[in-house]
Image (cartoon, rainbow, N blue to C red):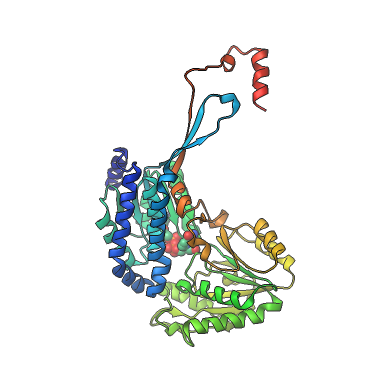
Length: 453
Ligand code: NAD
């Protein structure tokens, strides 16, 4: 493919290597995003009905903060780091330097169509790569604006946006890129990994899954209710780290459900599905899927639909059979299934019986329980007494584990994901101990055993 060859050639020229070059590109990106803030907002409103506040909070502002953080720390991230050599390598010196892979491919989903394309780009530029982005075909307005943004910032040989659907994406993953960063579903993630194996291309997979929200009887229930209601209604639940289901102590379930209902009412009024600040579902197919799920179990609150605007109110449902799709598949929408437990000892076995989730949220005041669950449960990342916010700290690597993905992004972790730690041992010219060379004697063997043990 011509674009890839162009980018490989540009990378091989060494132009992207100086840290000053990378910082200049990040500054250009920052300024162009500021200049295009309005069209980006409009596109996010058209694709997902996101309010100005939500667009800035979770997409534009998020990316700007990621750029600021990268600019501030890039020199230190990119600096070669010395490593102490063991005694048997005396007097050599070890050094590790993060070096760019070369040409990177970013495949992004539709739910945060700006942030999930541009935040990885920030890491890719910071690491010194050339980049091709293939954004989601399901958020067409944002994809179009992204194309304009990248075109006005960069030459194609450095960074380009390619539009297209699954076929284009599959064709791209078959090419010999030097690195692939994929954000999306587990099903497609498997295809990306399989395609990447052809060229042994390193891959980061940022996938989804069912992220539990556990509320025990010691939790601050009113605060838990507010934070859960907020985390679930962001982007109408179409968030990879949205609380996917509630796992709550039966003793506090009634109070929690009432609290969440009250908070949702204070956020969006009687009819969230008519509120202009409440986002819409991405397309008709997704709207139909979520609307059909409303018929499952017992409706606790919400349930309103607005077909014209493709909106479904935040909804709580309980009494679900274990094989309900609400309990077996990622909801990825505004429905929150409620499951209760009677004994906290049930929490870990329940989690262990399911695939490792991207996020886990625990609402508790019990420090022993917090320690036990955080150390024993397997999940990508999460919050204690909050939801979603762990992903907004650039100091915290963000990523899944097992079924929810591999590798991390954001801040330094993103820079490291897009680069390879090149280790070099600088040997001494002055000293050359003969012991390592054949012919081997008993004496040299005993020296070896002395050092290597
Ligand atoms: P998706 O997997 O359907 O699509 C993601 C991207 O992959 C799109 O650009 C699409 O065009 C491309 N694609 C489609 N077929 C492909 C193929 N055969 N080979 C290569 N690429 C292909 O995901 P989606 O529906 O856009 O997003 C929803 C999913 O993404 C949810 O599961 C959600 O949890 C997950 N997600 C994860 C994160 C995270 O950071 N971990 C963030 C957002 C969304």
